[in-house]
Image (cartoon, rainbow, N blue to C red; front, side):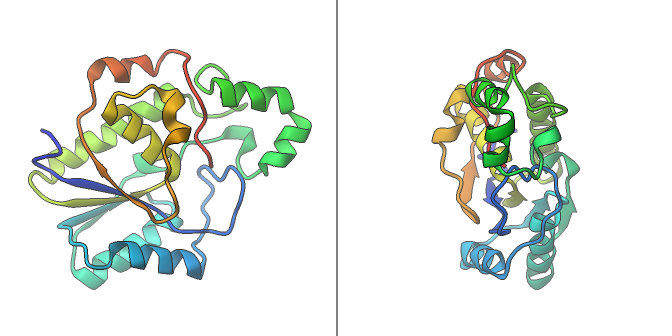
Length: 202
């Protein structure tokens, strides 16, 4: 099944007011974030909504699905990357206290993830599994997927066959929409088990 049969749009959540590696912390949206997301979907149509269960995504997903009468599914595999011990910590504080570890992570996060963090192989596996499930559950339907910046960057890299060290060149602003072309090349998915990359941001 390709995305030509099931068009998927990825929508990043709006602003939460935090400027740190948020990961899987369950932040709520600012009122600005709500406005950003409402503006992003205005004039666009979908047949179903699938969302990360974290409230900065799920609260808007529930509001949109109710207002438009769309089916909604919360998909735990669409949560953001888990930053382990760095989750919730400002980058400046990490740089001051663990500067060498942060530099290694930025240079090659697959080989040098944060302490206690999710591996990037696991991150890629759960995201590709989630997208595969969406394609099976909604054949031929337009699906809006509400999720996170790191998720969108990784899926776009996979879909385009780009190496992971290009992720930071992909702009994923708050409440930005990104059409997803799927499936990716299987050889590129396999590469995520090997060291090669730059980090997602929180």
